[in-house]
Image 1: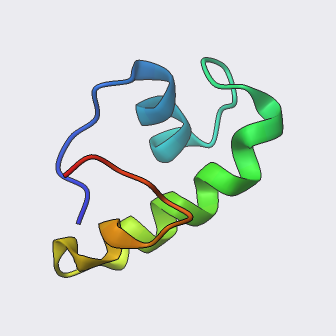
Image 2: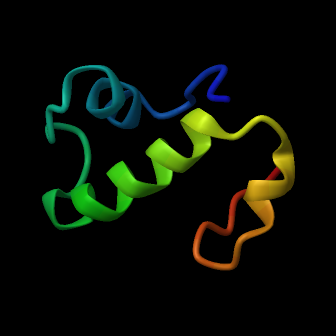
Length: 55
């Protein structure tokens, strides 16, 4: 349930897989987080301690 991105590098990583604009060492973790958010039907997944998002 990803509606929009504020960070251009993260948006580019999500759509193309390009690591330009993000720290390459964070790519694996970001990919896992984005995959979870993509399939989330509600905001409840945002409360997971490993994600720490601001709803």
